[in-house]
Length: 383
Image 1 (tube, one colour):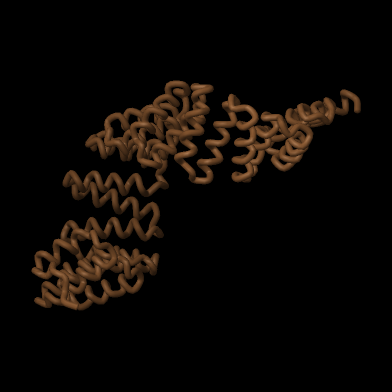
Image 2: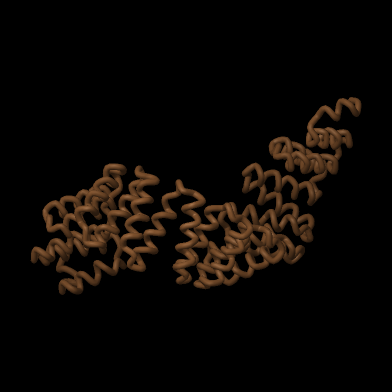
């Protein structure tokens, strides 16, 4: 093959061809396997690296590279075996600890993964991907201080990493450090001002930090940036409603429905607003529309029952609540709604039965417990 022939191939294929010309020894196959892996030609990479292992079974690098290719191919158990074999041959191979940690995370063996990642970082402290994954493992386990520490190290070494700032913000938020979470989300938005999700997360963090004016402005920017996104309008409605701005809240909720009239949950939200404002008929219309759009949405039926009860249509309310429970027998709040109706009719024993049914779904459901106590029926019934 002439040089001109090689130049007709794509650059990545040329690299593979040149490596094949180096021979068929283990080292050449390791190099070729890693090139193929970089090109995402996983099966070919695995084939080359398997040959390398056969040729040189005591090569830690061959087992390590085969582990990388196996992990990329989704062969997680095999990847773990390869990494462990590589480490048995060379305990100083820091990259194998990183790979082992990644494989263990995929297998949900998080405690072992943490140990592997910490060992990898002992050899090479500046590994942002390892620290990022370790932070996520700590976050999933509720080890929030450890998660925050790792994400802070990530953004220190890679301040341009948008997702690093987002995960740091999430960890801080989980730890109740709401102002610090806002700062991290602000940095994420600064890096990617067109990323709508980042703006949504920032606005929600501002709400949690009590910065409602800033949140309202952020949701307004989102609505302008993505006018087809109904949730920005709906959240604007929530903020206006919380501050008693009734007209503005109604307009925002109605705008959300206008944007996506086929979303049942948006009709639920608008209906809930009407019900809170003492307009049960308007609320009922919204809940009926939600139920029409999604006949299996038990909450729409439950809320319709509440609206009917508020309108004094007791029998219809009970019928709606029973339909809700037919759809979802575990809808514990519907049992309490029925208990309210029975109590209003003076049927205390039936009200208590509904509360006990709710507790059968969730023994810790406080509304049912307190309702039973208020009824004077909180003692266990005789068998």
